[in-house]
Amino acid sequence: MTRDGFLRTGDIGSLDALGFLRLHDRKKDMILVSGFNVYPNDVEAVLAAHPQILEACVVGVADAHSGEAVAASIVRRDPALTEQSIHEHCRRSLTAYKCPKHIEFAVELPKSPVGKILRRVVRDRWQQRAL
Image (cartoon, rainbow, N blue to C red; front, top):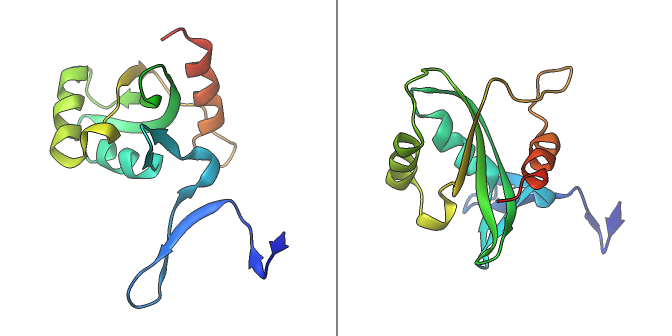
């Protein structure tokens, strides 16, 4: 839909110095932690770089202190992977508010027929829990 001459897609992006558009994430997926924007794709990219992680999905969950907190559902590549290892890995690459506060290990993540992780389903699972 266009409004004021702009196409509203629901994506969040920015223009670099050369005028190239970089898409960060979907607006509905952005996590607001104490007023700071956290893009799930950025956190997922750091998690995917961990050699013991097969795949990960990051969502925002309600948090009494910060409004929302980062939660990660992770499929292990190596059964020896621990939450402590993940926290240490994230602290090396991310600012503190972007690091997952909640971590769960899953056997598999829900996917669409074409293999895309269904973030909405993962978010719903986290919301059903009492954190």
